[in-house]
Image (tube, rainbow, N blue to C red; front, top):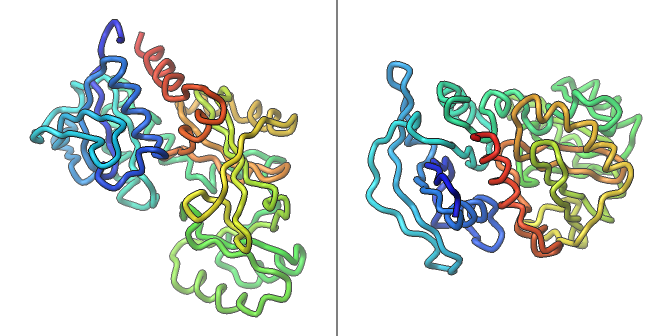
Length: 316
């Protein structure tokens, strides 16, 4: 039990459909409750900003680790989020204008009410763009709508990955070999039907050995797991069949984490998940990082506890 229980508002998607044995937000809620903190839950659509004051139509919530009976909510009511100690920004992507709007609204609270992660930094650090600021850590990468440049990039690297710039969870990720006849049609789809340019990267064959997810808490490594793609699949995401394996950090991965740490700390990005394939950093996940339950099962750690220790430390 915490000496001073916190009042916590959790901005996330509905609790009804989550997998309680994998969901990182649920693990954070269980740990907060075990510490005696008091929680309310609301969805992004329940936010309001009136004359500079942020409110939410929120429900008091309790949780338990029982499949099919994992939460209880009391009647919702409008509350002022300035009266909360912490707001957890835990809604899942897509990182679209609706998501960006919530960060603008929550910016009226932070830092007097601690928002995790800092909403301005979340807005300014989208996963596939933030990583481009770290020279020498990312594989060859192109972001453009220009067909000629994409064709030149493919001619240079032969084997490529093309994916939506603001996609998530492996959706819309395509591995294009040098002789793939679908390339033209895919290029039309990305350039004609998406307002945002696609991101194109050199294919990293090391992905067959796994895509490593590393959790960083206030810039410090908390743990890692390896996600190995299923046979016949280029994506390693667990929900599309990737297999989770225990993992330790290589010297190169430690170097990458050390390079990121000062910037993560400076931006108030307290809970971050990064993705590394081979020797290359591919994404920095700041919106709603996942993987902590799997890492805890492999390592016998308590990453939710580490996160709450960091949050509580910010408030003392």
